[in-house]
Length: 493
Ligand SMILES: Cc1ncc(COP(=O)(O)O)c(C=O)c1O
Image (cartoon, rainbow, N blue to C red; front, side, top):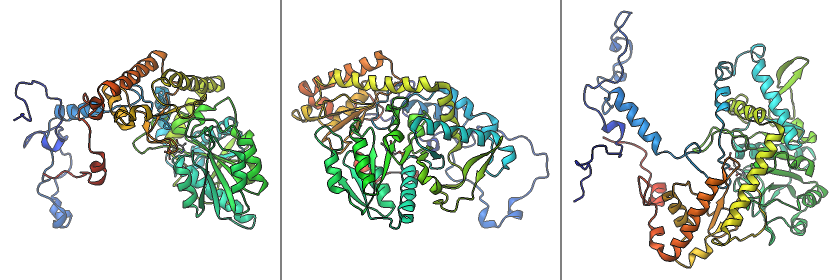
């Protein structure tokens, strides 16, 4: 039988839980001696609240604690560890200067209740960030309140609903293309709208005639993701905007993929009425694992009255919060947004400058197209056109050998890469969605391409190797359904 803890191995890199480490009486930290009179807790609190012992509590030394958490941190994979081409998520490098700035005591220690007079620095930053986002996008005003892209969508759609209601009728439907991000139909539906799906054409983009057929006076808005989830620019967007506006609808643009457009074009100039930003993607703040994020929303002048309160206003040389906005949809979260993320995004914009942002988008496009062209001989490319910031392949060629997108993704881990997004977008069966971002050098892209080519060859010659992958990771293939349905979230002695 295989030993669980092989005695012939000096350093075992399997990490027990902290509760399973240590020994009775072992101490990691000594409190300084008491300089007040000792009190008996039982004389202060009700007896039922006073424990004699913390049962099962780990008793560990300092070095055990340090090693435990250091080892766990080394099992993590992140953008600071390697290439992370997770399509749709824009896992670009987060420059460390952003962290430095966010940690400045005046920002990090600011309290949301502190008076405006001593919050001028924070208010100035928010006001400037709003104007930079307006400049980059072509929108009129921006709220920084929403905490994520999906939250921004909800806020944006609530503003559209309020506007349509003021026009006399909130209307009933929202058009959502089949290439939109999944959060778009969810946000529309949360706002009480019926979602009407619009099919994209053979070029993977919106076809104006399809919009014309679905557009009527019951449609409140269309939600367009641009570039869409196929990584393609919605080349007919101006015609679509005209059709929707013609029937009194509003145009919402999901701007989470703005990393492809900075300095190159502005959706505001295309006639879009509402746009959300994913600061944590485009403007390079750390993300993943649920946040914190930031999803500001830009609107054109006719929707500015509906922005969440408070907005930040300039009064001469001072800045203040403006709560006196009777048409506002109200607050969409506590206080003013994820302020630390706003600081990081602001630092990123300032350190890049206008030229730097444009160059970031250009390199993101170049990198994605380089991968697209180099890999299309080995992987099926359902939409064989120049792409924007990401490219989408499918597993069709590998299916012949019984190999799926999941197997390819798992095998990539053996080559040391984070897998791409798989099975999304839904319009591509067995999708492999690769977003390299601008952060990567050509050598890294070449290594990744080499790994993908090898995997394509392995699929032909040794498909079993892929179906059982990964082989070199700490744990091999997990039963993801079981992990999802019956997660073990609590430790019991
Ligand atoms: C196109 C698009 N829209 C919306 C979202 C949702 O953003 P969030 O995850 O911040 O809610 C994402 C997320 O990556 C996205 O890629």
